[in-house]
Picture 1 (cartoon, rainbow, N blue to C red):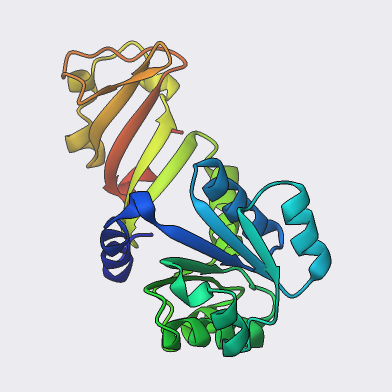
Picture 2: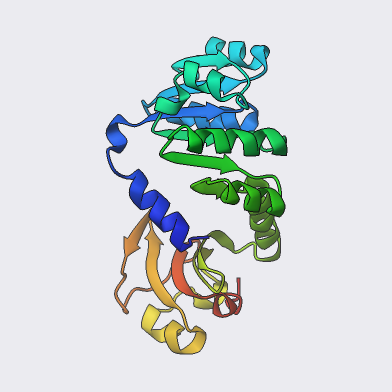
Length: 234
């Protein structure tokens, strides 16, 4: 879900992204995935963990540019490893609340501009925000919500929440809509929704005309209130 603090964070993050250096602290599944993706995209990544075996595995798998075994709750260790010099640091120690909070505090006090932290609970998330985390992610919660929605609304392929009451969703075109044009469906008056795109031969047509006829097996991207989206026959 997008909120003002997230918008400000990502707006600030855009500056000088080409030369940005990243550090990932905590090399569990989440931390490894973040490091792997950043490294694959060509960014310089410094990986940190207190477990020497995980550090060795990261280097063996060539997932990171550099990797160090250290205790991130110790500011001196972070400083010596050059972590405070990184532009963006991801704290992926989600299951160890105390270590996660202390590490986040150390990073902000050490002058790191952008600190992203993983939370394991609502309380953990609030504490991370209190000690200065610039952006907090709660992947287990988000994945759980997404799974519940997909089980109850299997026709919804993807969802982007604009706020607690409005979303953009990609849906399989309902059977009742197949063969009809967008104007014939009158989605705005009947459902309170606007069509942003419709798939055509594996590609999306953005801002389709009212005369666009929907085909079987196609998908549509619509925007509107969640209670209106829930009324779609998907």
